Image (cartoon, rainbow, N blue to C red):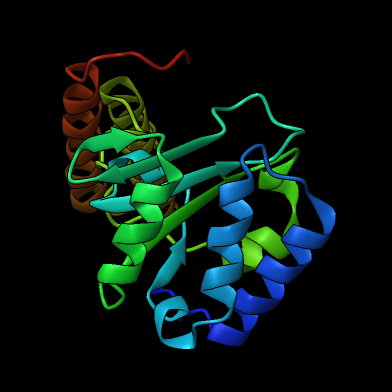
Length: 191
């Protein structure tokens, strides 16, 4: 669970951002200044990535980025009208507002990353494809197989050292079953 970002940290970041970047739409500057001057409203602002999935969010872009200058998302409707979004912000001050800022090297900017929060609206499969999930499962299965096999081989060696025929036979049978079950697994990973 992520700790909440303080209003003061959000204010500091927005002020820093306005000092260092020029936004493509002047209305974006007005909105950010409005947010900085209203603590109660700023408490409901969350900086996130991929705001297009949020129930209510704004994308603002600086001059140094190729992204669209401004987008306001509300319940899957999109507008580029900053005045409409400003009106919505003023009327719905107690609702969460998600904000995405596009600027050069945003993902590498430590100040921006320090105020970023996890986007609760991103679908699980957005970043991880089915193929990625399958590969991860196979990697985990292979690791587990290798661990169990190494453990059994160590125990087999120990049973040979102890000259315990019964234990040896039992462990060799377990190893055989383990290898047979592994042979039936689909192979996407290269050995």
